[in-house]
Image (spheres, rainbow, N blue to C red):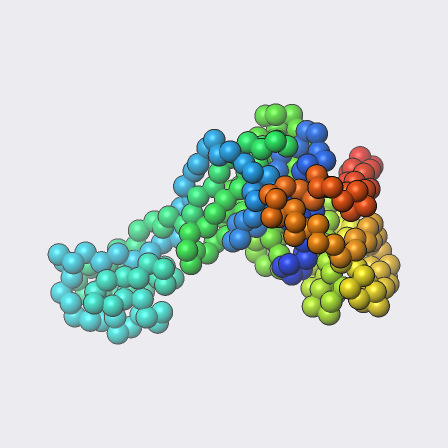
Length: 287
């Protein structure tokens, strides 16, 4: 069983559109959406949820008003301005526990925090594991590890050949959590200055964790000079640019229709994505 993770140094490059199309082209795969801060792969795969689990992470302060002497010390010393009228605003509480330590009446305790939920769903292309963080919640790296581990368990149970991982943008903790141990990373970029800059950063992360990477330049024709610069940079880094996809409104239309791009009527784009899929499978088979 192999795992390919689709990531990008920045948001808005079309990463999820390609991940959804890979899912549609697969015959025996489990999908996992590791972009838990803004999960949207479900928009293309139309899942039917069959299992929901709570995700608990971190601590939040809670004040027992029956014990509280209303001395005001917690409100005065809270560095995050979380406590007002002896009530805790749980969306802004950082869980540091300082208020509980300095409360003279021991009226403040730190309790476990419900940070979100994760789901196991059925789609037309296989099982999808995805998640949703609650409002203003953090620790998404831990939630990424949770959904990724669950996807691996399901893939082993179903004897799946492949895990398709729609990773988060950027280079932070959630990206590292979704990338480590993968067999191949598909880096989706675009020919803008920010796209080039962030491609360099995410490729550096892949190299650090020794995950082989290939590059897809999306909307390459909006600035062919920058596309050429990306190809030259990737050549120097020993990384292959395996497909260049032109700008096309079919990507937006596919989202509006709620289906993968490869299932839409644009044969040219579908053929390019199919070649991308074949290239990825050839590389995974060779490893």
